[in-house]
Length: 112
Image 1 (cartoon, rainbow, N blue to C red):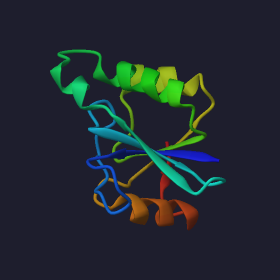
Image 2: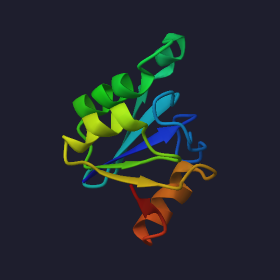
Image 3: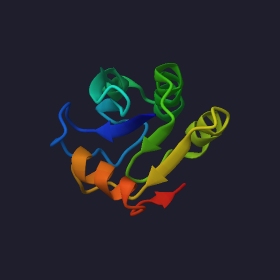
């Protein structure tokens, strides 16, 4: 299973980014391979409008099974993500990536 995180950095001990559309990085943890990969999303900062759907499109291309984020995607991005069948969990805004993963494993996050 592949799990995506919205993040401010590129390591397990990086802080979660509570924003979905304007997240700085998307980290993907592949549980089967025990491998963490990153996508640099900082180019989205220059976008005046449509950051959420553009980030959702990138997430669609990365193809994770689960998304863990802080506040959740906005309406337009949520519409795009719902079509993928991806499970979305929110409430991990003030934690590290590792803490968010552990909270998910213990059913400590809210399903979007």
